[in-house]
Length: 587
Image 1 (cartoon, one colour):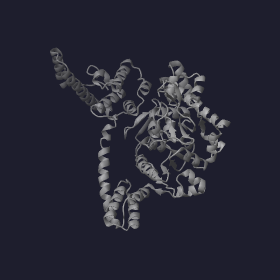
Image 2 (cartoon, rainbow, N blue to C red):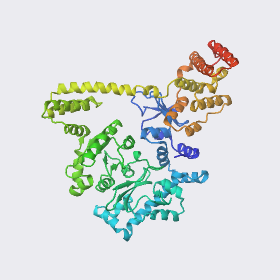
Image 3 (cartoon, rainbow, N blue to C red):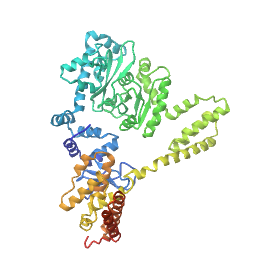
């Protein structure tokens, strides 16, 4: 979603970075800045700085940096539009109204238009469910134990059997076919090109985003037919890999853990029973996007999938995804019901609560699944089983966890604990090397490779020590810097010094909202190396950097030109640069 600079500016200006970051780490005012322990890495000595004037943050320890929007993006695992929504709500800004105004001033706002259409579709389905001629749909919900209050709470509805009844309703509202088709609520006939409803004769489950706006639907067919459940296609509004059904309600309260189930009815049944922390993925496998979404609200998840082969496989796929996002995982397998909805009808909420409290760790769930594939009465099979279990325990990062599970496994399967731990250690060391090999390059990726760190150090030094510009401007130009953001930063700093005007930091915040770009921007404007208070050091750094940047540019140009005069000029410049020695008369 695109937002105008005016909207982004208003949100940022009304979102005080000091108060927001203070919710994550204690800040102490120190001169013009506030300092504290970095919320992005573990440290004992504060190296994290927040500038109230610039509304930016920077960590001198790990290099994290940006503005209030990127801070929320990083800490809450949000996308840029989600962070804007989050901050707009805090600042009591009606972003929907701002979007509509933006659309009026600058053309049609597709997202706002689609949200409007989905809102009207949800109302249409809800009121259709109440009509006497559709009583078979209402009876379906009542038979499933869903009352009128629950129907209203979840906005449940019914898509009538008439093939284009919603389409006709929307046309009376004045919507264009092109816009209706883009929402995914309608399909186009290959025979005559006419639009018709995607959902027909189905009970409807509206799917909400975190801001409680309808962005999609799930529909269950009444009677026979396939598919049994049909979901909206992905669209401008709807990304299945980042949407969890029920999360818009679950996030309203704090919960000790979240419960992950498979379907709409399971979510509703669990919420009705008081387990309002229950969510479900939508017609797709559990993804890394889902895990990141849950990570914003909880440190622990109980997987409560259907008690069948598919449910177990789905749980085994979800566990490593959740674990890789730092979420503790437990698994509850129901033995007297195929799913949570059926279990609650049979045994009630108290029994469900008891089982949830006793849910086993993901490790024992996985061990039991491994065990089911071996015949442990056979020595060779038992060896293979224990080797696979040792590999599983070796994948745990905590040595305490490894020790506890090793002890429990040795007792249960009558294996010498020392022998098991030796096997675990072998796999753990192998796993550690593998992880280190994957993580190692990321150190270099923090800001980028090549000459980028050198360019950034040069620019942030010049920004903090502008007096030096007069001595070096004859040797430096924006063409020596990487195209795009870095070149724009160089140009802005040069112009700022020449005209004695401040750099327009808001321009860079608006033009380059991505986290990696904001890290670069904050490095230039927030980082200050006080070693360069010494003239000899700053002179040496600037001289060497100017030489290197010019040499790189000259070598690059020499390879591209065949003009003899130009070649001679470049070679002379190269010779002059070899002798370059900048001296500062005064600091």
